[in-house]
Each structure stands twice: as structure tokens, then as C-alpha cells.
Image (cartoon, rainbow, N blue to C red):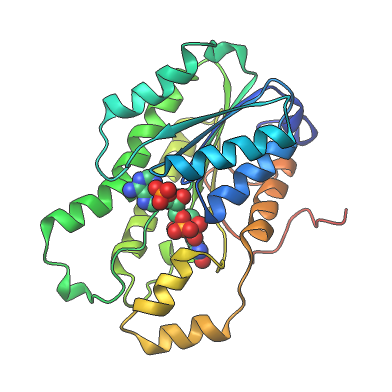
Length: 270
Ligand SMILES: NC(=O)c1ccc[n+]([C@@H]2O[C@H](COP(=O)([O-])OP(=O)(O)OC[C@H]3O[C@@H](n4cnc5c(N)ncnc54)[C@H](OP(=O)(O)O)[C@@H]3O)[C@@H](O)[C@H]2O)c1
């Protein structure tokens, strides 16, 4: 048995969900889907740097579903420290107890590409590399640790938004590939350390977002640009729906890396 919960049960439980990078792109689509699915009394905490976008998404979600609560936490995850992240959780949990939720879900979605105009030999600036790995790896580990401690007595699911680039090396995306590989391995270790926590590394496929446009605009590798232009492209909504489907059926092995294009063990129409 690979699943830790009854699949049909997931969306019926009062859930605390935190989603990083919720201001746009895939993160926004994920929170919109969660807003439709979560049980009454659930809460979604949206995190990014952009308070204006988060507030507008918060108001929109709240209009569509008044039975759940939406909170926002503004943070630059490339420069924050553990105290800043603690404060975000404290602000939300000061008004309710972690144990009042039946399930806690953490979706690590925020991410950046690094500069795709640079080759491996051109990443000589320590501060740029440090900021990159703080946002894409260190802040993920620290936020995840706070989440696990705060919800120690609650059933938990953790999703790392990964990428094919965490598995396959891609020229011009060296920081991105190495950051995604590090994240995947961290969450694989989490899965073996904590068999009671459901852990998923989900690679969303090529998605029409600002990040994809940055590759097309800035990569030094014209063959990569051509490949992206000729290849399939998904909407954020399509890939967010697949993630919801994977969580609903809960049939993945904890710690697995599952790509949007992987064969679906539970086809959508069944
Ligand atoms: N698009 C694709 O084809 C694709 C493919 C595979 C994997 N992914 C992964 O999917 C995830 C979402 O990507 P996306 O395509 O939706 O990208 P996007 O549109 O560029 O969104 C990135 C999100 O990350 C947040 N973020 C970036 N820097 C941040 C910082 N310093 N502090 C806090 N938040 C920050 C942004 O929020 P603010 O700017 O508001 O802070 C934004 O909400 C990423 O992990 C990405 O690697 C994307």
C-alpha cells in the first residue's frame, strides 16, 4: 500500500494549506483549485513578495468560496530568515490552533530560473549563487521544517514543485537544474525519514508562464529555445488540475518524482 490516506477523504477534511509563489503562474492556479476543493473551515496561506497580487487573489478566492479562509504572507524567500518565516505562521496560527485542522498541506512552488544567458563557466558571483540557492533550496528546507514542527500532531502532505530539469541536465539552466535536483533529493529523504507524511515531487511539464518566457527570451542556447517553441505547452490550470488529481487519488509512492507526462496510474475518466 503506497497511500497514507483514503483518497476520497482528502478534500473532506478541514485543511491548513500553505502555497509559496501563489501570486501568479502555476502557484496561482494551484490556489484557485484548492479554493474550490477544500472543506469548509479550511485555510489557505498564500506566500510571495507581491502583496498587491496576493491581496487580489485573496479577495477573488474569498468571493468564490466564503466557507474557507485565505491569509497572505509577504516574504522575499531569497533574503528571508527563519524568524521572518516563523512570524508569517505565527500571525496566522495566533488566531487558531494547528491541531484544529485535520490535515496540513504544504506546496513548495516558488522558484526562479537563474540567468539562462550564462554558461556554467560564467556563474562567478558568490552573492548571485547564494541568493539563488537561498530562494530555491534553503528557504524551502527551512519553511518545510517550520511547517513540520507546527503541524507535528496533524496528518500532513508535502508537495515539491519540481521539474524535468531536476532529473535531466539542460544547457543554460545549470542553477535551475541543480536547485531542482537538490530539492527532489531533500524531499526523497523526508519521505524515508517520515513514513507517515505523504511527500510528492511533482514536475508540472512545460507551462505557459513568465518563467517559460524568460527561457525563450534569454537562453544562450538557440537549440533549447527551438525545442521549447516546437514542443507542447500546458496552461497553469491544466497542470494544477493534474496535481489535484494526483493528490485526490493519493496513489503515488511517497517521495516519488512524478511528471505531468508520466502515465497516470488512475486515469482521469475513471
Ligand atoms: N513554467 C514552467 O514551464 C515550469 C516547468 C517546470 C517547473 N516549474 C516550476 O513551477 C514553479 C512555478 O513556476 P511558474 O512557471 O509559475 O513561474 P512564475 O510565473 O515565474 O512564478 C514564480 C512564483 O515564484 C515566486 N517567487 C519568485 N521569486 C520569489 C522570491 N524571491 N520570494 C518569494 N517568492 C518568489 C513568484 O512570486 P513573486 O514574484 O510575487 O514574489 C511567483 O509567484 C517553479 O518552482 C518552477 O520551477 C515551472
